[in-house]
Image 1: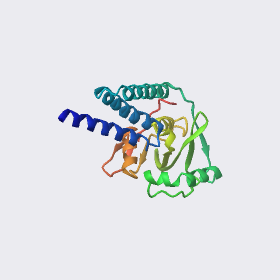
Image 2: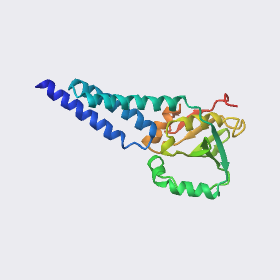
Image 3: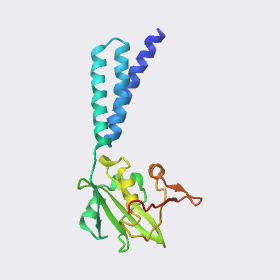
Image 4: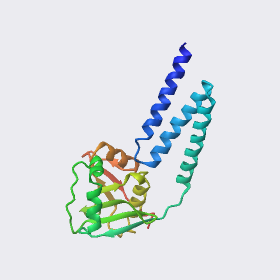
Length: 212
């Protein structure tokens, strides 16, 4: 009886994981979570001798693994497009994604400044996100906005732009970049990109000149 109850709960857990995967905006997150749910469902089907369930979910596991391998092995062409603070497309982009931007930057509102450095991050020439920074003091860039649309939310944008900030994009003027922790999600993102939190609560990253 206990075994039957355990198997039932395995089935519930697998169903919940697969259902949760359907809520992901990021294709990468969807694949990883769906993979876990399908693998658990395949084991569940095998244990209760429901072999069609097991085979179907085993097939889904293979499909997820294939797409994950394709994603991680794919060589994308990254580039940046610098724009002015009054660029019309920039304003439309920010307005269109305003609700999602507020999840990471709750207090953000676009206030154009002529001295801002503004770049669209391009992946295979598709706009994947926008990066806005300003000079806070000599040698230091302060992040105003670092936003990536859901389909490209996999840290590749962040790694690319921060590796380009020293030298290639801004000359050798800047040695570090700082950012306020605008939300828990944003703080988690900064930690993954190698930022260190200072005693004043700000996050700081020393820029490398390797990408020059």
